[in-house]
Image 1 (cartoon, rainbow, N blue to C red):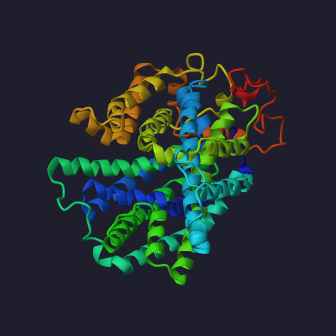
Image 2 (tube, rainbow, N blue to C red):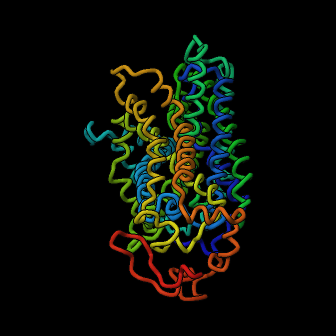
Image 3 (tube, helix red, strand yellow):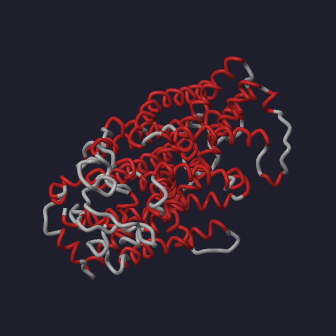
Length: 531
């Protein structure tokens, strides 16, 4: 919850570039891009949609990183600025719910790669393990064992200090892209004739249908990336300097995410042309390749690929989901949890929710997870709008003190909530229609859902700006009187203190501390507001 200590601000532009370079080469990125072909777009229209979506994703990530990189505070604390001291609990809880679900899903996806790797090693001895679980379990004994192994083996990684996890991303950036490109080359070699000619629909779209399909494809790319956009402050806070999170992140995301989209589209098309069946997921592709080419060379290559991808998924899980849940749980229950303890709790709960059951039995639930980007998108949009309105001036001490700048109305900023509702409610009917398509719905609601993330972020930001001008907050407009980010220099001595230099709240410029309140998190002090 406190600002990152100077000794922890070790991430440079190289590390952030490694994060997004390696993150681009994931099974989710491949599957999302290739699945867009089902929208009846041509290959070049799909590639263009991926590029536009990547530009929007990169721009949103870089913008949302700025305040965290300047003041070295993470997502939960930043929400206090716009939503209020108590009001921030809602966006924190919202993100925590999404994170805990995706922790489980990511563990299960990693286990599917491990399942492929074990098939390569043990052959039919592994692949034909008798299933002792009932059909209602939604998982076989073989896959349950693989999932349990991944789950247990993830715990040691939680001992890493967050600011040191950059080394995992550096290693991932060196290893994962080459093997992903290797898989693409293999697909092209065996089915190159179908890379651009194979299509799921002989009748391409025309007119408005094409336009809305293209927009929906852009929305799918951005929506798949939206959890990272919202969570990026939790790693941006460790930046050596704010510029490290600007152009490096934007360019890396645009270039490499676009490239992986092309690889996924052409690779999936080529393999579908060869085998006559489309495989969206990389683990299904691996199984298909093994089934058609059971040779020692192919088994070894697929084994290496599957192991690396399994590890890659868990590195992604650490930075995107586990750190997010750890930060959120530390905000919600600060008396008992810090970020690392919260990560342990999140990983434990993720197995209890049985993610294999979620994936196997509730297709609509996956639609809900995708739709959750609509709910997440408005939160950073409001935070960024607030930051711009304040001209980048945040009083850090007030983030930990009641009855100060971010107290609003008894700890709640109603303007942020009104802006959030205005941003989200128009896309809810279209989202609900995805669960039950038996009832007709006007094209307007459906089309609005197709641009849901773009609409929610834009409406959330503009609504908050309008309400802030209509109902002026004294602290905000006092901050506007100062130059851009002028408060940083004024608070430099507070932000740069290391533990032990003075009597502190976990090391940050406070002379006296009270216990957290019964409501959970407000730190009240005598001297912090005077720093």
